[in-house]
Amino acid sequence: MGLRIHFVVDPHGWCCMGLIVFVWLYNIVLIPKIVLFPHYEEGHIPGILIIIFYGIAIFCLVALVRASITDPGRLPENPKIPHGEREFWELCNKCNLMRPKRSHHCSRCGHCVRRMDHHCPWINNCVGEDNHWLFLQLCFYTELLTCYALMFSFCHYYYFLPLKKRNLDLFVVRHELAIMRLAAFMGITMLVGITGLFYTQLIGIITDTTSIEKMSNCCEEISRPRKPWQQTFSEVFGTRWKILWFIPFRQRQPLRVPYHFANHV
Image 1 (tube, rainbow, N blue to C red):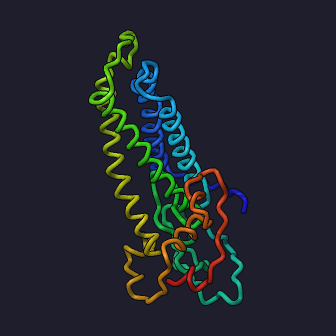
Image 2: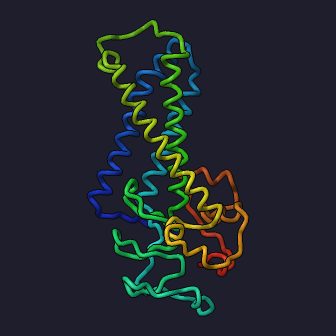
């Protein structure tokens, strides 16, 4: 399955995503400049911690960009419905097109998305069948990067030895306290928000329920077979190899599962 680029024209989404990129750049530039590199030069921390920091940051950025531009599962105008699966399709009352059950019409994007979870302004895209795994990786690496940055900010003042070499001519050194306070505020705000979001996403996958289905309570009305959590996660990430669940550089291949399991709503 080739990479399908999906671009949503939405100024509100652009602003939200721009704010996320600003926070990422703020931390990826200033935290190493103020904390990591000075303490490494004075022998307080090993270089591997800096490599890990940049590695997490790169994975976070790749997941953000790919979740934003990857087609979430937009349905074609004239989908080919297999003869034996017609009972699992329905007519959308907004765009008057046939769609698989568990699909939803996004009013902001103007089309139906397979197994749509929600429309996320922070990535300026819908979260659907084909990019849900990238959205989960974005939540995971954002939380990991935020914890990493907050940990080093705390250690800089309360654990590491004081720096002996400080160039007061540098702007970041003269205004270090203000910069670190702003970084801590953004980090704590990001951590609280992303933790709640990540938790609800994980619970949704474990229970095999999308956010839209939770809000509409449609899943409570229908008895359905329960799948083990390994199966639901494998379907979202497109592989049963758990190590690949953390890699944002690969291509997702849908797992072939019985259709009555994949479309039980």
